[in-house]
Image 1 (cartoon, rainbow, N blue to C red):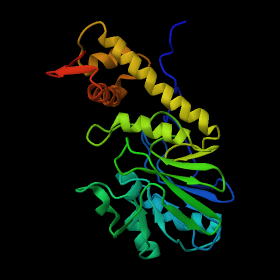
Image 2 (image 1 turned 135 degrees about the horizontal axis):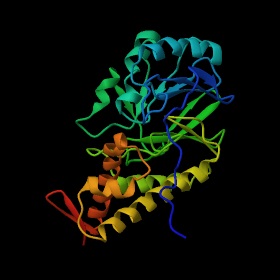
Image 3 (image 1 turned 135 degrees about the vertical axis):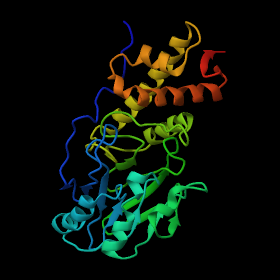
Image 4 (image 1 turned 60 degrees about the vertical axis):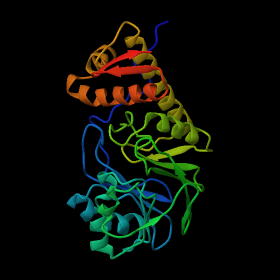
Amino acid sequence: MPEPQRVVTDTMLGLKLPDYARLSPLVATVLGHNPGPFTGPGTNTYIIGTGRRPLLLDTGIGVAKWAENLPLGLRELAGTDALGRVVLTHAHQDHIGGMKDVTRIFGRLEVMKKPWPKPGPDDAAGVPVTAIDHGAVVATEGATLSAVFTPGHAPDHLCYYLSEEKALFTGDVILGAGTTVIPDETGDLGQYMDSLRRLLALDVEKIYPAHGPVIHNARQKIGEYIAHRELRERQITGALSNGPLEVMAIVKRIYTDVPEFLHPAAAQSVRSHLRKLLNEGRVEEHEKVWSLK
């Protein structure tokens, strides 16, 4: 039986989520309203805890509608007008960009994240950042988050394990639909695969992703993400087994089920795999043409 074209088959295209919603007794969400083919309806920002000063996880990109909805969501979903600390998964703009609105509305709050290697985008927070790393524990009334270092999508990326629910806030490492982009400049697919395997080792039942709906079959989803990337690698080396190719020629052979306007994004994914294979000594590149070693 031939292999499938892909393992992860769902997509962000056409997804809709409410402006804000209560997801569990400990977790509520406010939508970032920065829609796109890879962000879905926008970045999910999360209100975590049961007290009068809950945590806020991620801040969206800085859209005015999110800044309007955040106080409304706090009141209706958490019964409070205050926030405690802010915890960030990473410093990509659609996660850190709303921090200036948070400061304007709620005053200066402590912002916790793993620092991006200098020089980096942490200054977009507009306030000093409290450095945390793998294993750090961030607690608020009713909820305890443990940081898990998960580089690959970004060099500063932390996921957060909510022990009370056996749930994981995955940022951009695992999405509610589709697959994660590995950026050309700062991404590393080898690190990303290691991060997925690190998450698979956790006792996790539910995933709160940065984009898309809640995932209730957590371990199955993590396994699918690993299998999907392993399949893509086999497809790329299979394409190269017939001779040297440029990246876009590989895309056209593999991504036959993807609309052409998404081929540039697919090319980024192929490049991430080729860089991993290059680091492993399995391929070589000459004048933008790739071949097996």
